[in-house]
Image (cartoon, rainbow, N blue to C red; front, side):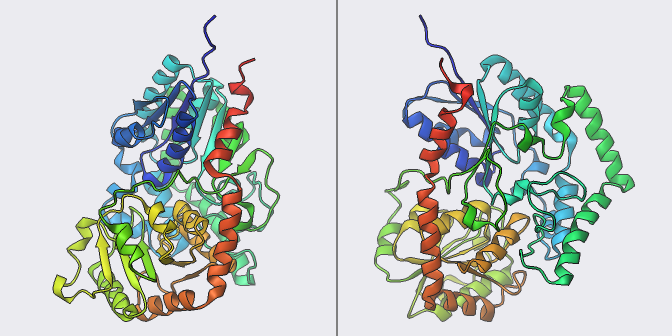
Length: 462
């Protein structure tokens, strides 16, 4: 008798912050010899998915080219300024208005539907932002697991009033950047955030988009139950969250939400790193500056960070991951301080963060960076960028592992230098970061996630 097929189909956008944790999980299953692994993503992710093979094959299924409206790295400068402005609600509104594009998911949905009909997956593992993925799984009644690279309340808290929410009334709304303990003004702002989010869908322009969304859903045959606000949570077999309860504000976490800590592959990822590890080892204290793939610095901001590096000379070196297209904003090479090393790309940010010479991570505090820095016991200085970054920044500050810039939009050298110096000199930040690092590692990461996945009824062989 032949073995019973139990295909597992991963689905994600190609944005690295969304894709990478699922790649780590797929690679872990491949390493364990699990058969019939499939990964559906935009064509851009083909090479990354091919590299996930550590034992058995991980078959790539293309969902076509990247849709610009759904990929923040492709947005024009005007859109970038709107979605990263410091008014948290206006930025939140700009993200929704720009990315709520029903027609953009039609081809993705149809390609994924054709793949599902061919592969007949026993289980789908879907990145939490991939709406067409969970809509299809619910419609086809395919068991699915949701992967979440943010703190758990990000996906368990409603953005609008009166809707179902898994967090208590008055809990900080995602993307608001508000703390748990709020002043009266902040409590009012929190409620207004919800009301204003609801209100934006009542404008004539957004009603037209909603009508178009309803038409497309009907055309694609998407089940009505897939349209509910919390559908991706309610219908998931399990929600894998790459965090720990202690890194979010306290609330009763539903049983189906399993917090497994940061998804870190076996290290080193890149032993042949062009001499970077040797450079790090030759220094006692290094500040690592890495602001993700979306951040676009101005000439003034780049100059301010060079000035901060100059002020740190004599005590600390700086490794700066700065995209090549932004390096033209740097001052003349001969004027750069000797304690600065610039890389357009590091082969493994995790290898860098794991290095004992790295003492602080200067970051935008995206979901992965926030958790990965703390996984290795590194305190943070945060220049929050957008959406979830402010939420993680306020939690990190409340939990004593980070400080947030007072004016992230200007990158004031005095502010940055002061925050970095304080985190570097005050051992309490390191001690707290190491405490949370222990919790993140104890949560089990990729191994715990794989165990939970393989233990689901959908993959049972008898």
